[in-house]
Image 1 (cartoon, rainbow, N blue to C red):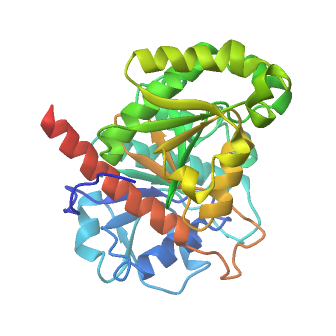
Image 2: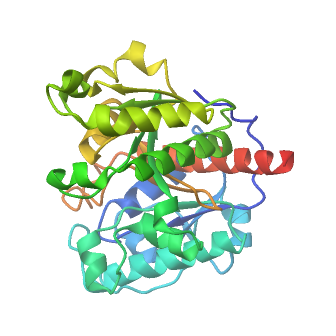
Length: 342
């Protein structure tokens, strides 16, 4: 499924923004550090508030003042770059100060990666509702990171990846009734090309294979269940093929995610949010990673939310955070190898 180069050392540690301090971000980050040796994780450090981690974990934490200090302490303690003092933290009870901390941590961690003080960015889970109260005006962390990198949101792609499956929702957080209007030829083309480039750049896949899902049941059943496949999707796919893109479809979404079908493509393009996220969360819930394509840096995130209802109960599974750290490492190594070939 990928062409990663051999695992080599990164030139710097990975920066992880804490996320909402009242969510499960602090717990899964700490648990990832605790499993650093068996999981063979590269050095990383947390940007946020040490107290948020102490509130859910009794392991060793060392405050650092610069990312360059992280590797030196990583073997014996979780490095943390303190950027905010939230005050009293009650796991599962979000606050405005906590949202401000999450905002500051995201901004600081993004800046450190942009300045090459850190190799890659992993973002902890946040609450969009809480961030909005703290003055965060972006739809999500993806759009914020893109803006800070000088990339328009139209040129980025959200890919969800797990063992054996990668999916790209062409439209994301919009009501289902708005999807047909939002799904334009330009959008399909731009997202397809960006996905091809991302698979080459971050995953080392020399000749990416894409599969495009239909919008309607049974991909429209020849026009009987909707004609978007005939009038919109098929012409775009034909044009992409003429430009050298290896893409098939439109395919019936109900048959695209069987084990046999998944062997025929490297990424599935889906028309709307649930069409992409239901299969990835069903098949890869504890290892799903959100990776942003189209950025000059590597940014990943565990494919789950803050789970305030689990915070502080020692029940959060760190698998997706571990997978996000591992994918950030591998993608950055691949990105550097691709840059060396240019």
